[in-house]
Length: 224
Image (tube, rainbow, N blue to C red; front, side):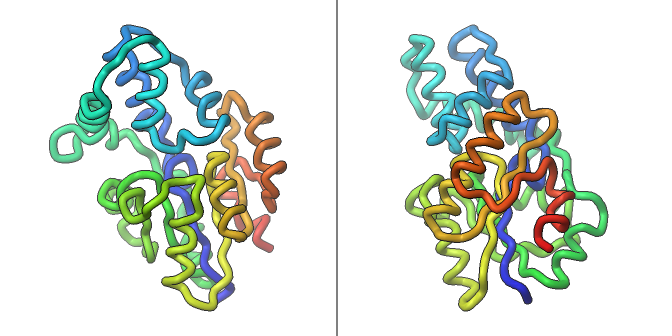
């Protein structure tokens, strides 16, 4: 094995434009009556510190002058996203990898996930979109004391994979900062549809990214 490839999930393994991002839009509208754009959301993400979508919604709602209780915001967000028995917007998520990509990677790398969502929510989408693939370990936001950009999740995976080199692959500046803090190489993913593609690419490069790719399907080209 060459090491462990650690993947962020949202925006890397799955397209969340119509799930998480749409849930943010609808949650903000529910509490404020205002409709924010995907570009607006990306601008906040690029500032760093808002890998947690609940915290992002809370900040935007409060910035618009509405003092809604945090618990109510989270509850509404989760009802939209998960629905009843996982039939909510989570079902809109699409697997981004082309057939065979992870099977080839698994011949040389151990595959792991460090995601800002809960492990249970990660499993829902993995079981639906890629039940044949093995990612081990999977570390979610309830498995760490400190969320990204803290390196806790990456460091936990390294402890579970002793003696193995690691690379982290993510699409958010907090992913890059988490990798930097953990002292592991980082590969940034910036989709062609990203309205702030140039800005995020520059942020990744400033953070010391080994490479910036437009899709996880390009990862073999930069791993060498």
